[in-house]
Length: 260
Image (cartoon, rainbow, N blue to C red; front, top):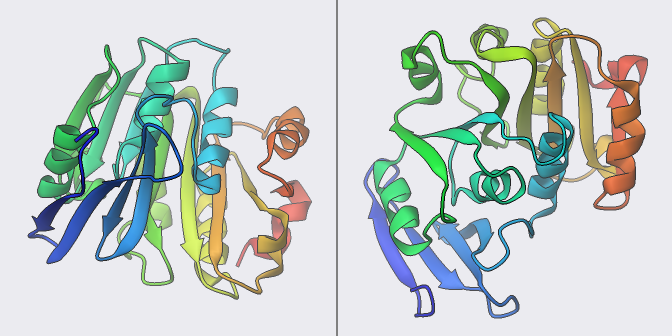
């Protein structure tokens, strides 16, 4: 592998098994599963193409964070199969990236079987997201900080809080963007609490998702984006146009109903 069969690895921290197997429907595609559940999709041949819709939405936000093709400094809190790190390298060559992952075996497993694009500048850190954030060089700031560890209402309390977002904001460059993927159940309890926590800290906040997700009738992912200053109004229409469709962006007073 690449090109072989399924690879597997036991993850000691969680006690689950991780597998990487070829995607039968995508040339160059591979699927990372943990505990039998699909977790990430990687296209080694075309890393700028993202299969999962919520990750494509995050990619669109990264696209707007700096002029097209310009290198950025990116911090990934929750590494997975490094799909977004691959995307950033493909679309913004020369970017300096850091990835924090709690599960050491997972990161080793992914890097061994799904090599990063040539030229990728990625520093990996093993540990808890909040602890690792505090342990980074205090002079280090980022254009984009991406948090992708929430899955359902049982989110880590020390991370799903305004205190953590204060620490993350301190790591943002002057025009930096904090992106939070929130996987949630119907009712959107976690989404509402995180909108409120982010609004207490950031200059402005927006939410980006499949349009029906905001009705709170079924589980899924909503992407929250926090800016140091005002949310750029043009981004609302731009993101909605980029999809995946149907897409909707809530910002300003439109976001009030999700503020907890």
